[in-house]
Length: 194
Image (cartoon, rainbow, N blue to C red):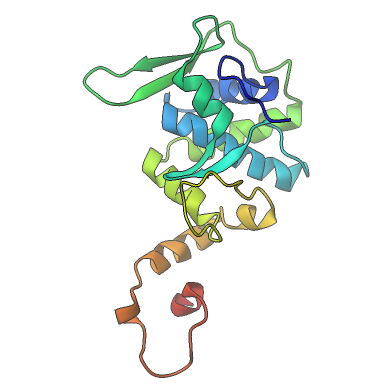
């Protein structure tokens, strides 16, 4: 069942956000906080065979976003385990977990390890890089911003690899003018740089 209200998060998603905030080496901004749960679920599907956040990961204009997290954090209730704070002289909004909040009651040991890995491995990426990464993990999306469901399966996991991301970055830099005009027909952008 889809979680409809912006004043409450699914318990697992709230626990994941709290743990991400506490385990990230640097403070999370709102963009990272709404993208990292997607990476948590991609990792969880590979390791545990199931998602853990109870969130809906959608293909928004600037990458994959966990929609419940976005709506909740945009109107973050004051009596919450999470809070948002504008950064002075900046457009950035930071997300913080309250000292008293804990994710331990809602996450298993394995789930905590996955969240911790995502926090350590991906939270230091710039928000734009994180958005681009989530787009590269979903190459089948023809039009971003239509809020379709993002892939969390094995293909998305494989596209998290540094080798794939490097190849995808190279593909992004190839134009039709750079491709050979004669020779074998190229059927996919990946073939152009292989």
